[in-house]
Image (cartoon, rainbow, N blue to C red; front, side, top):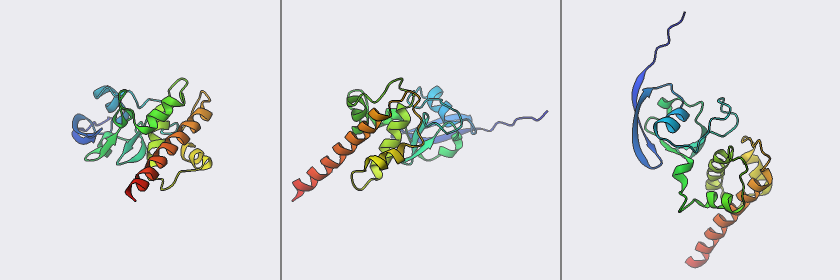
Length: 173
């Protein structure tokens, strides 16, 4: 019978633009810490294997599947969840597009779709094509079949982002 050794450690990281600390087994999946210790319900437990995208968060602005990331991996890093992107009163441009396009049916995949879309659009230099959007979202699973609405929401978010950018450029002339 093998003994399991737990390493309880104090881990400090930035969570939704606020420094936090948690004392836990350093190998605890980040998803459990976010949901249980910080009551953040955006990231969902989907497959538990990092395959479906329901648990997606941004770590240092890159999409990460927090069901397979140990707590120790975020020490000193920036973690952003769905709750950190915006609020009910002031949703992010991506969240607003998903609301406007009614891009959610059961809502389980919505967290991953919004997190992935945010990271994708933040690194786009120009408005992406439908094919580029589909490629960016290909690793996120939607069991309900709201893909059409999700694509429309991403297109709307991109339209808003890039029309706002061009308006700012025009105002600067």
